[in-house]
Image (tube, rainbow, N blue to C red; front, side, top):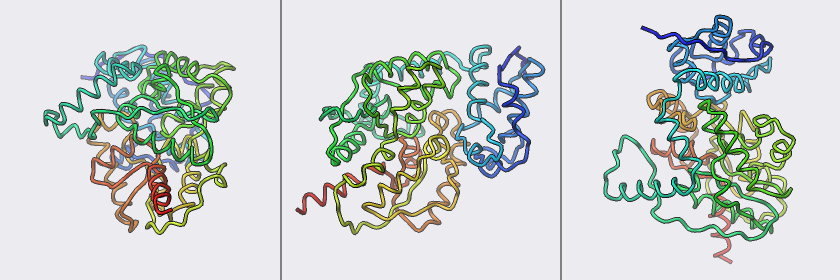
Length: 390
């Protein structure tokens, strides 16, 4: 029997009224594509939000439908009315997290660790050891975590590189490759200390907005000055660009104005990149949702890649791969079904290698056997091989 909770979502009435239920979002919603259920679509979820806001009562069924949204925001790109679905979902989850048992303690603890760089590094090394001893269940499908990480060293102060939490703990080699590509333009790269840590994106997605704000303030303090802040993770970049909205301060807005996806910055500095003729076969570009639908800067990836290698487009119009930050861990069956559609598109493309500018997408597709890397890892390797030939 479903349990009822008193809830006030606090969603703007104009936002709720902005959806006219035209249905143009349906083909772009991964959970609707999998389930074919109206309540698993953007307009269905908005209809539920209206009902709960009017009644002041939610139940377990409502919570499950809100939690089952991947928050890819593909519906926003498709919507002719400009419905702000992402902010509405974030507001809904914040209300549920604050007023119900939506986020249990074990989840809150997990999210808290992301904001503790030293504890995260220690836990990651422990997992790495357990992996070598084959004591980590294969069903968890974790990537192979390095036992040791090469320390990144600053090379100047023209731009900052945001290193984040999980990506720094598990994929620092990607940061190193990105740093080398940026430096190939002649720019010096400055690095934040541990104070920067987590951007808070997963906390916002989970409705833990207060914690996200605390993390945002720490990040802002870790990047003094006015120089550009480059981000090589689409999800983190979208979150950092949203600090002005999240915190509602002039200082936060000024910080967000300095944030660029690293491909955006490189696209503005193409003439400074090394000129290299490459005979590499073309590579498939998989657009992370938060680069395509939130930052809307996915074309910059192609501009940079096409300096060195041809690109192959997928035929799924940017449909989500199913990673969704923590989503693939919390909803593995749905995430796998969504991924299947992405795999079908990859197979139809005729290519074999994939690039994606988001660690979550990379890991989720890698678990399914896809040969995938960050776009700038590939660019870095092309530049390095050319330099060796010289």
